[in-house]
Image (cartoon, rainbow, N blue to C red; front, side, top):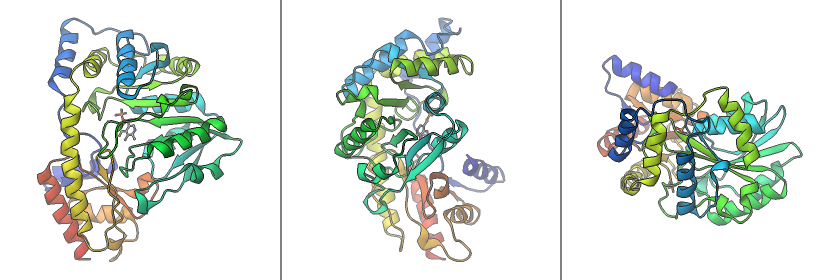
Length: 374
Ligand SMILES: Cc1ncc(COP(=O)(O)O)c(C=O)c1O
């Protein structure tokens, strides 16, 4: 958000900024979804709804999850939230008390840390292996489990690295978590954006529903970031607890967005494939350009729409951290990227390739020049 604000300020001053900071699709929301929202307004579907969303939407979420991943959730195990972020916030508030520990692999989406801290919990970070695409294993996680561990958060495909956990390793991690009675929160926000493997949900494992909690989002899958629609799938007592919290904070997600969400889930799904094909083309381009810059290292992202190169080769001339690298790259070369410090590492920057090929070319030309000339 800070990078976006700085880039915006420069732009308003007339500077030609290339923005790789945005964590959202550059595609518009598909027409059928927009039309469903307009129809909802015309039909005066503009009043309060039940706190956790209308039954029709909860059923559509359960049905789509069953079709896509082979799970069997019922509407009573589902709640609709004001974006996936809100689902994660509700979950942490409901699950975490003072001093409870939450295991989070690094690099991590920035919000996890803050919502755990806000709930009074303690984050326990697990390092991943950069050389193999920021992978981590059940064996890496096991030594960090203590009697205070309540939750393990897995985000695959990962923001910021684009790393994807193999199905086999995900299953091993699930077995480890359930053995120790640790809740496994799986953030499935980018689940439909996989380049080399099929979409998969750990909740489809037999018996997993008791231990696994799913945080889902419409934002990336249907290019609906501004609509603020997400959901949680979890055991009923947990859904009930989250519902209490939501009923006294936001109440229901916007009624109109809910109708749009039903159309997103029940209508044609081909826009996802169109976006994925375009992201793949861009991913290939970004990786090849970054690998051509002397000293820059990048593991090929296997999902989502982010590249997370190690740019420590550019740490000279007063630059000693990714944060300083990003600040100088923005002020001198007018390219906005997100420094790794936001995600728990110090030698990387996040490049979002959810932008046009033309912008990618322009921005990567500038990044290459910025590093070569140091
Ligand atoms: C990993 C991850 N989870 C969840 C979200 C939440 O998205 P939203 O609140 O827009 O549904 C994001 C958004 O960037 C994300 O990157």
